[in-house]
Length: 162
Image (cartoon, rainbow, N blue to C red; front, side, top):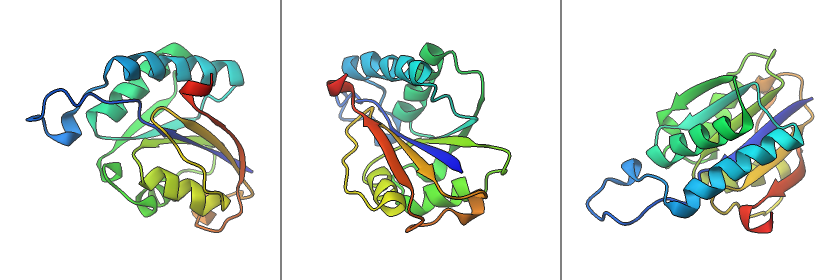
């Protein structure tokens, strides 16, 4: 069995209309929620073996803050193809992982992440900013990850519900 953690970036700042979308940083709420989710990851034992993160500034800042709060020491990979991507980009990156990795986390954007979650679990759950979902997958090899794999949505943590 493999575990996939799906983590939407924390709330971003829209204060500078001239700033390219990919360069928007976290806002005050995002800077509060990202480390909160990192502490939750640590307390729930949800530290992944690898984090695959979008190249967008808000996604990278989310990972930095959450990883620091979780005392995460594992590997992080930046994936530019996650920016504004559909679920296929996430599926492709995860399916290329080494099978020694038992738990992987993807960090990116909606609607792609919600579509990914729906595709691997059959659920229609929403992922607001800084939400984290845990999916247990009935696979032994990452290359077998695809829509309809019948993963089990174990839990979704949303910052407003903590």
